[in-house]
Length: 364
Ligand code: IPM
Ligand code: MN
Image (cartoon, rainbow, N blue to C red; front, side, top):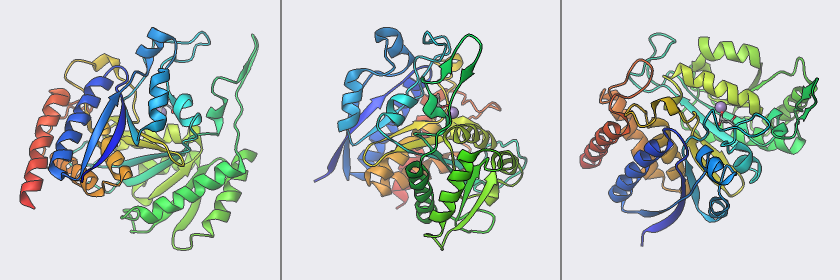
């Protein structure tokens, strides 16, 4: 009998609903082609629209469902004009899901697809293929909502714990082992810690723990790099990297830098993992300026859905979906605009992707 999985869907704001719909339509097709599993969806409210309506970024029903589902597929959330009294955005979920449920590992693959324009010049597809592992539950963003502000000054605190540094370091080495390909430059399995340990004690603390954990994984190369140097190398020598592990805010910033090198954030999925719970999402915002205009690129959301399938244990289906997205770009089926938008939006993308999926399955 086919296995069935309960999936919470959080469509989010801006382009969220249209790219999430696209991902669900594609998942339905992959499910039919596979015949191995059934996905049961439960749609819930979260994001800026939700904050406007009920004063909370995620509904209590969604939080409840999140904890009982096999996994969650989340769209981008937030609208610039929806703010809390303290000036921060009202529709964001980072603190709600990542911190509340201790989803400490934020996995963000950065991979260059064929025929996607990169500002780095002529590059072979897959010459950029690394994962940013962002620590999700501490670092500077732990200060979210609790920093101290007076009329004259404001402070946020960066916190590192031994447990947090240890578990994210260990996770990075496991990722390096699990990822099939090593670094494009030399095929090596390599974990690079990105920090600022020349200046801040918290990062020196992280580096010391990272090096201790590295000793448990003699088959994986370990190195560390300061954040400023790393920012330069991600532009000049991205092929060197396989896994990058870093603090919460550094990971947030480097993800956008990495995304820009592979055609924009529309190409970037992300996963958030705790001991048991998880959710999958694009790493970009809700792009309200292009919402409803048939311009959004659903690649990030669809690749997030593929990551979810893999996590559920449906590796074959996940690989099929990833292969189809790769094929779609390789065959130049997507009318990509120079700014990364798709002419025709999610509808045209899904139509083409379904054709590629069908052809892939018929061939085997
Ligand atoms: C991300 C986003 C969020 C974050 C924002 C929207 C709070 O930028 O997932 O990278 O900082 O984590
Ligand atoms: Mn970000």
